Image (cartoon, rainbow, N blue to C red; front, side, top):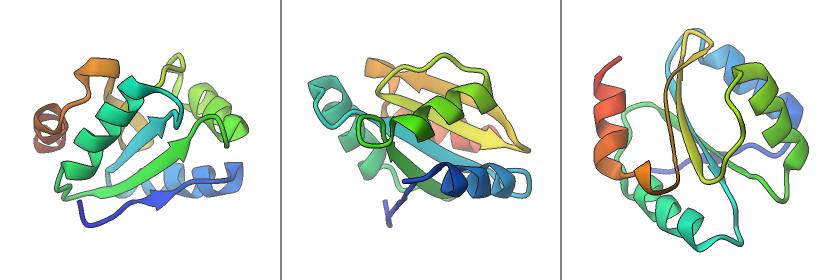
Length: 110
């Protein structure tokens, strides 16, 4: 992956959500203390995404994580990945279901 931008504030998240209304974005919610999340993070960062990618560290940025849950209407889990297009979730996965292969399938579907 060329690189992702870390979301550290609710204001940053709102900008990303607005951006997703014009172009799809990929979002990864990451727990820095969880081994399952570390494995999913490896899958996320090894994926060469054709869409912009964002990361939220859920422990350090709990308010952002909570706002994402409210805005997207998807119960929080971590690790968790979302493909957001036109302001709505078009795909999401959590835990062991986050793989570079599945990220690729999701992005290809839009």
